[in-house]
Image: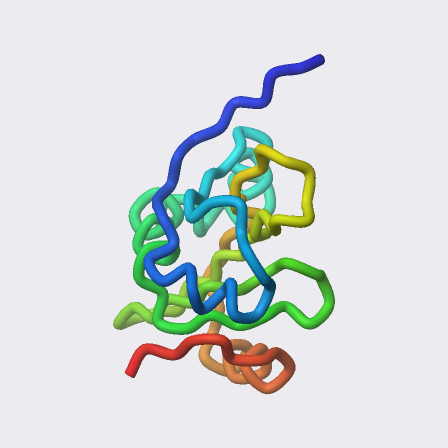
Length: 130
């Protein structure tokens, strides 16, 4: 069995928001695997520096959390910066999932205002910073 290298990213600040929607989560810890880091570098190379700078902030203090209507147990954590917006996609580790899982980053990319509005229209808002 291959060992998967995990990198701790941070903790979900208000886990109750997600548990209200999904039921009990296994943990508030969010990780990213080396495979997902490679994915971000390959698919969104122009965004990787932003990932290194802001991924933890996106997880710990997102401006908005949307429930992914297409993928069960997945959320979009959005962070607005002065010049752009960031979207980090997180698969949450539900209590009904295989034991020992952590909430994990699926991908990360910049998102234009126009696309962010579309995302908000299509997906349920679970949290919005006031």
